[in-house]
Image (cartoon, rainbow, N blue to C red; front, side):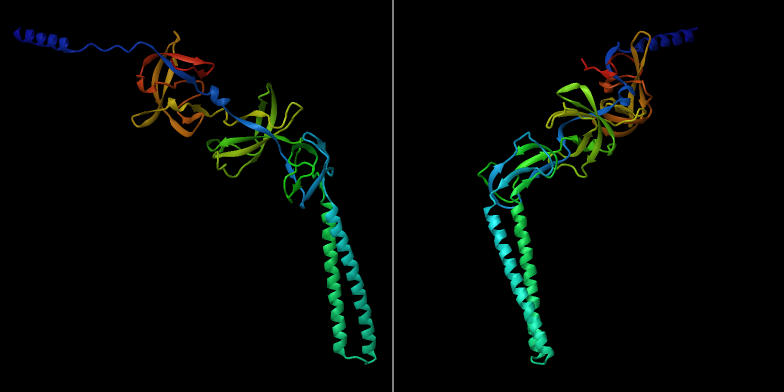
Length: 364
């Protein structure tokens, strides 16, 4: 009996020393996102400038003084139309001098040819030696070469005369004029710029982290900042092979398939690139945490009372981007994941999810 009393007393003492189990903390707000909703429609939107595919800088091929300008900024021009003219006095004089040289060379060549014929007659009658005939034939060849030379020079001078007129090499609109009548210009200096208005595109700079899925021919959607209600169809036409040294981004040109009169050169446009497939799950990088050395996320299971239960789950991750991190396995579409305060959550903890249309609202 005494032994039973001792055992009972010790049990009571041990029970008195044990601490009561701590209850789980009360539900706390949790910033969450529903995976799969935004991932299926995830798109990269970049801002670019509306430009023409072809922009031609027009300039004279010779030096000279401008005496006439036939177009202004905004003028519509046709291929072959004269844009401006140079003073042609000097080039015309050069062409006349070259033509005179041709006539003199033709006369010399004719004389040399006649002399060779006479020398051949004398040689056949054995009145002169073979060396004398060879000398006359060499003079004939020299005169022929001289004639060919002056004819080539005359052709160059004739071309120079034609270069006094600046001719449009394509149809389009004049967007820039850099010369006025009376101005002396150098060969190659830009006088006017002509852009093709039939092929309009948008130039955007794409970050290097988004280049993996971008390919020529990808379909895009384009909206002008001047009218955000209308959407234009577009297609990736060109991707720069190297990053811009200043921006470290890649220049991408997107052609507008169906431009209208509302699309003006130099406008600002937003280009939406649809990058991810519908079965690709992306979560914000803030949702990822390390538990026991493994990548994990906190999955929120919604309850009938609109609260949620937080539980960790191991996941396999893929590449990172500005949109977040790709989850290769461990998550299913439409599951709810905590994206803020994940390091303070406890397994089985009740939370109050905070979401707006699949996109998490700002944490309080």
